[in-house]
Each structure stands twice: as structure tokens, then as C-alpha cells.
Length: 143
Image 1: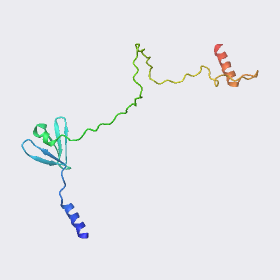
Image 2 (image 1 turned 90 degrees about the horizontal axis):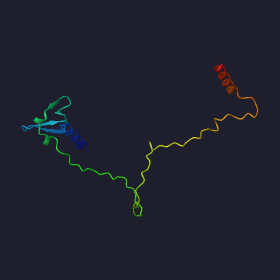
Image 3 (image 1 turned 90 degrees about the vertical axis):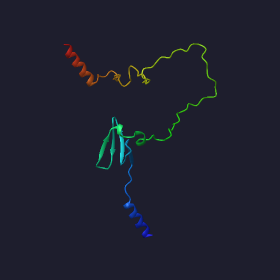
Image 4 (image 1 turned 60 degrees about the vertical axis):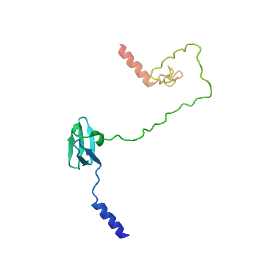
């Protein structure tokens, strides 16, 4: 058992790293590369981690280097509105155009006078200190 594990590890160590891409040149040459990608007007080839070369698209066989991907386009089902068993209503008169609301967000209208904002009834007592001070300041400004 131990021999089999050691043999497997030796074979894995001796195996050459597989290259991820092949670049086919128009003159018939083949370049083994780690990565190949396109940019406008250039084809970039990463041969190893240190060597990055650029080729013009006219030098490379683009059909063989970048084959079409054979994948099936998946269609995602859209949300379906359930139909009721009733027949469609046919309008007999011209449809009345509905008013367009602004943003579609409506806030409830607040009463003009909130009970919290009304002055407390003091029952014939003297007015509050703050109100008294505000009234005095207003009188000074008016003088």
C-alpha cells in the first residue's frame, strides 16, 4: 500500500504542468500557453508566469484559437400572473383615461392643527413662562 502511494506521488511530481490554452498561428505553429485573451486590436498570450506576448489578430487563427462555446442558453421562467376562470371584459364605451399620479408614493394628510401643538388651557391661570417671554420680546421688537 505504501509503495503505491509513493509511486503515485513520484508520478505526480514528474508530470509536466498542463497548459490551459493553445494558440494556433496562421503559419501553422502552435503555442502552448497558460492563458489567452483578446482586447481591441490585440491578442494577449501568457506563456508562463513571466512571459506575456501580444500578437496582432492577423497573425493568429482566431477560429481555432477561440472556438465557439457550445453551451445551452438557459431560459429562466418569468413570473406568471394567474388567470381567473372569468372571461375577459370587453369595454363597451371608450375607456376613461386615468389620472397619472406623480411618483406613486402618497403620504397620509395630516390635520392642520395637531392636538399636541395647541396651547394648554390653564383655566384662568397665568400664561406659561416661555410664552410670556416670547410675547415680551415681540413687544420690544415692535417698539
